[in-house]
Image (tube, rainbow, N blue to C red):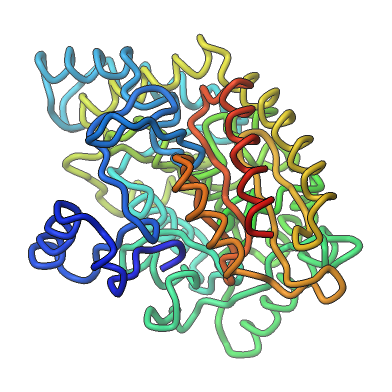
Length: 435
């Protein structure tokens, strides 16, 4: 696992941490992994900071789940108040889910007129696949080389980033990520790759149902530019009779700064949109926004009910999150702070031969490490060293790409210029020491 704890270093930890890790392994099993060579034990959080058991403060430059900040008081109060009043499911009439649905759908293009609720992004992806396949009458799906779309059986089958031990579905085809460093016209190149995958699929007697991708290619290595490059690919998908599913779990809810949803930067309207993690600031709520004509037959023919999807407490949390993003100007903050970070990271990149590029948009940025600029050979070991050394300096980030060589910088949306300056200072210190 990228940036994960190495059990071989257990003896380097203090007695309390060793005991906790041993209990975890005994009780939770080997599937539960920890971040960082030296794991962190947090006991509370607020805003963009987390605090360990000794009271030490860590700058969070990674976690997008608490999108409006850890323990935001308005979200906390919304959860408390609703939990003390009523918590039930969507089979009863309720005003809250309708008000939230109106507010949420108002952030999308008008073509996306329905929303269906789940508990997790993985469930939302699973549901979107079911709808897409029912609508098209086809089964073939295209994903990018290192995509991650979830952990249900259906979502795992379209998530190459889970590794070789999690096989792709037999009707899942993979295309390279849209890396502009390897193509002069990234839009045309990506569209050609998708067109080629569709042709291969058809030669094998598989009908094409659609393409699913997130608009910033979060796990492929963070590819946001140029804005608009996805438009030609979506045209290819539609001409072939497929649908485009926009996975907005990571780039959505204002993270890119210029737009509420990442796909909007590309001037396209997806057929379905899945959203999750940041939606409830940590509460279990996710959703699929969809064009009515795409879901109508599914809705009439197939009963859909999710006991906890769209429950009243999670809806209250989601409403608070959406209101806070608007009321506190968090999209504008993401745009301004992200531009400040990117400009300074690009300047840093020019000073270090083993940094190929700083890239991204809003508060979703990447820093790519290579062994040398001539061959552009990915250097995942160096990226890992930077991640763990920043953790020693109490800054939390992670890494992206198949080789884990791109720093993944994705802080809560209230991350402002003063936080950015703190991050840049410590990043600069780390780069000077390890590059």
